[in-house]
Image: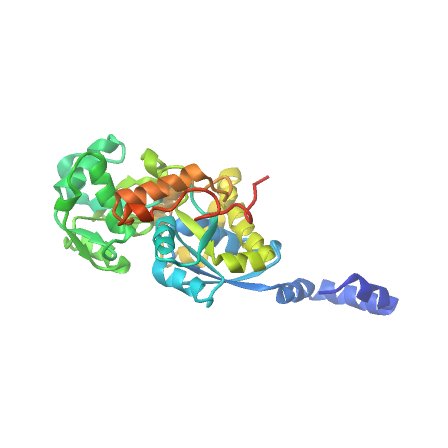
Length: 356
């Protein structure tokens, strides 16, 4: 990067030449500046709309504006994402908060430094024929919709104990149903949509656009979009969070702050300038119109936009909800291992700060 000292040593002729070149080859100084920025690596668990703030931050170059270059990859699951951070092969992991609770119990050195969402963003999708049979829609009372889950056959989940399984058990338990009577088949994330459309399973829960794709195809129906905030225990809830090793964040506070601020700025944009945020999300490679039709994009956006936070800071009340869900759904097996919701245990606002 060109410093003040180098400007002092430069001759007038060199400065004039440089100015001309900058005008002719616009962007060259900026490219040089970006090259000189420190690079951080961020792994995401998956590539769905729950991470919309991260995709918008990448698209609008908020990371560069905060002084870092971000190399973003998809790990293919929360566990490999967290393992990569613990093993120091990546700097940050963007994944679900209940996964962090489990990692903490298992002794993994991880802490959340930013929250992407203020609601849990999973959409519970059922076969369209089932919604029609029970005469329920997204406008039906939430209790009626949750009751439908107790009447279903095989339910799809990504893996045993995953949040895609636990959330359905939680919702059934909330209406005094018996979660032990539910029958799950574990198919992995990519297979759930096609399995529902082929009548292999009756329902599944994933963040958009998985369920929304089945609805657009006329086979499925997104019955309970939790991102809309209809379930109090799962609202004002830090769902997807940015995690780091505590020692890495402490040793590299500027990198941690830059990453946390960039994603938080993008989340805030959904509230301050939603049209800008929406356009940026639509132009991101994961929302490529060749892969995601306008109908699917619009439905997925509608299911998640309200879950975007005003800023990425967190609080003990929200984390207590994460802990309560983790305990109630069986993620925490031994009550004695239940972590505290106090700042500094699972999360910290030390790096994300407050929004303007």
